[in-house]
Image (cartoon, rainbow, N blue to C red; front, side):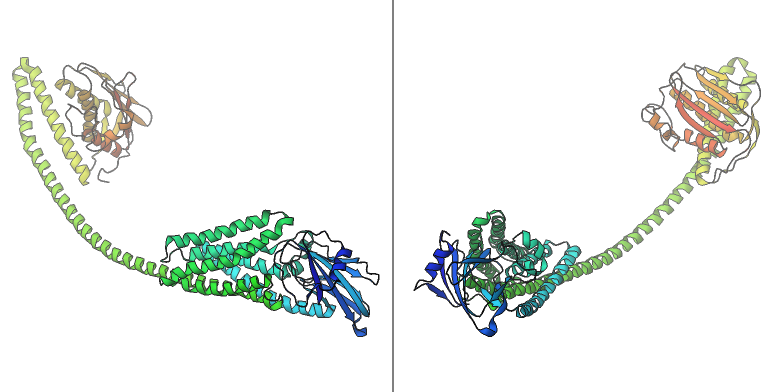
Length: 627
């Protein structure tokens, strides 16, 4: 609709004053829709309609620039006094429930001449795009346009879900940045073309006004961040990547500005955002050109994106500055730049994913090849170690056979001389009773040597699995008494206190092995207790078992070693210094007692020293020592 216009810089004109100036000859006339840019001035316009008879009736006055804060419309009757008719815009209350992306109001127009006076002020670009439409034409055009926007939103939704899925799969931040950028571009165009407040959130739009420039700043952040991350592995200077992040930070600052600036000052914030967008795209273009100049493949799709996006931004800037008309072509043309960016960025992400997948497969193949090679090496090592182990086992068997042969030979070679010495000492005792004390020591020492030989033989047979128990019924107190007497003869300065029951304690056991076990415990007490201190030996019994207790007054054994002393060849570090022994005696005691179904343990005596307790069942529960 042709109109005469004027700008009220301080907004002080009344409708009558504005109408008077607009009817003055020489007033500026506007026949096409142009943007006057971001200005704080109030726009006044006078519109004259010549209505033919067939055109009279109900029309809809449509403000077809969705982002306009407030436009007041006055009717001018024949008397020339403007009468308020309706208010349209983002900050005005809707006057109809019809959903449309534009701000509309029903208007009855009579045949003849109709004069309208409009007053508008906005924080966006000052563009007066006011039309009269029939309702059916309006809804038909709205339906077609909404179908195009639905297609756009469908593409955006597919890309958004794909980005979320790829992020869940790869955990790479670039997919979230792409989603952020997608939301920003979609927000811009849903607000600029009115689809959002008109169709998607009309109830919210009645209460809150959302400015698209916040989302424009958001696109700067998303686009620059995407480029910086995408070029993170490219062969470009670190300074270039840093400058791209500076562009993203600038967009973030503009977002904060748009969110925090007061509504009456929003126009200059919006102007600043629009002013920075085109230079920002140019900076990204030049920075990416550095990578292209260096032959970096990742820079090529970005350069293509910046070219399309730069064209769209330039188109929008020229429209906002009034260089080109504001119409459906210039509005949707800029939106096509966003669609182009979304598609190219999606292509770049797919390329990146394919490259990552290819690298992953290469790594897996290399890892598999390395694993197979390692498996071969391991097999060779296992074969070598097995051969070495077999050879070591064979050497150990040979050594054990030699050891057994040596022990058997020593036993044979020692037993005969010892038997001769014992027999001679016994004969001398009969002939020369006055020397019986010294001869008894000789015989006790002979028996001690025999017991030591028996200990070695028994240990070898147990370890070799060749020892069988020969059980018979015996009186345990006699064994204890004989063992104590033998040690007492060899150690006459050592008192032995025996506490034996008067009633015989009969059990089933191997007397030779049990004598070795009891003698080893007594000998252990003699070796470690101070000279002259007594060795206390007691025997007790109940219905099921007999218990032999040997207590000395030696240094004792720490709690942490009371189980280990029964291990083969183990000797207590503190007590072993200066005392003879091989660590076989107590090991042999436990083996023999366990074979008889009994137990042996060590603890501290009531007044210090060490106490050994041997418990044996009265009835036979023996096991083969070779098991």
